[in-house]
Length: 494
Image (cartoon, rainbow, N blue to C red; front, side, top):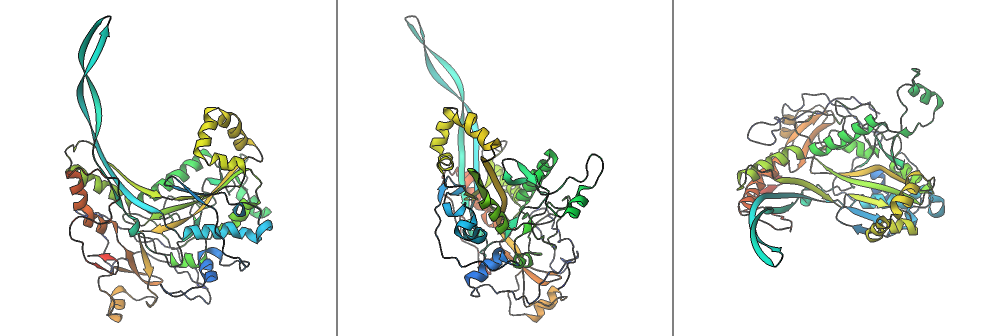
């Protein structure tokens, strides 16, 4: 089996007049790349038939024993608001020994939920404050008088939503499943955040990592304030610039990089990250020390009354920070109040899947009406919250895994030859579309799949400007831009 050769992914730079300027494909391989493969491996082509067992193996059961026989089962779920899917199905929270080994019901439920991408949209809103006057009657004894008073009112100039869900790329075998790194502060079964790593040294200077290796056992502890801040800052940064959690940043400490749940997904998403103006590498994707199935086992084995397993869905592939700035500039240039700052947000709906126990208290707390009553009568803050926070059989949350959905990514071309250049590949395959953006890696040649944020913005810029000028105020999501559509070939906007 070839060994990994770590190296950074190429970084991309912006140039004036456009959001994204990708370097010429002939010079894009200035950095070193690594290779990862497996023995007797055969990649499946897009659209090739795949059976259920193989599909699940691609999602994360590789290197494990084959799953036991399992019949199709429709779990009880409900949707709360726009962001959360909740299930109190008893099959998903009990010990696996009661239903099937290895908590198969919960594991397959999460894989099934991962098949459904979240809804993703852009929301733009602009307001200004106006000072107005009104007549107010004053009563003084038997005398009535009218006075003029001033007041401030917020006026909505425009408010509209653009649906970005169609821009999410289809995943024939499901999206990659990621698991948080050992040194990432996350909920691992408690009501507070923990890490699966020993402190570097004791106050006496003894190396606890060496002790852990010598003893051969896990070391789980509460995360320090610095670890919590660093994990939160890393997550916010990745969200803003549209990078997945498994990439390695220059500022990353060892163990903070998320792991990818299966060998096949690690192969497919090696060098696949599309990121603009970012320094990172995705040549050495990590194997999680505890995979999704093992986390499901741990959750199901817990007897806590208010436990919860939270599975998150994220979107990556676009630099949302830069795109937000460009949209804001366009809105201000076409707004009657350019000194004001519009609100531009990217929203993910149905981004969280929560699995909770099937008991009366857990179900009551999932109902907002009952939870408000419990707060009003001070039952929740004085009785339930202390029990959930400090009680041995109270609460605990597992927020350790999720699925990632790409807006744009690099896809390895199976017919490419290791070591050939983009020009050599293009000459060897003249029948393929010439407009495809390609680059070289140590795996061969990759092509960019999806619509880049710069291309999307160029197509929608005039529509955004028109909505600001015409003071559009409509909550219904817009799907197509104003004016004649541009031609589309191979998934790229021309």
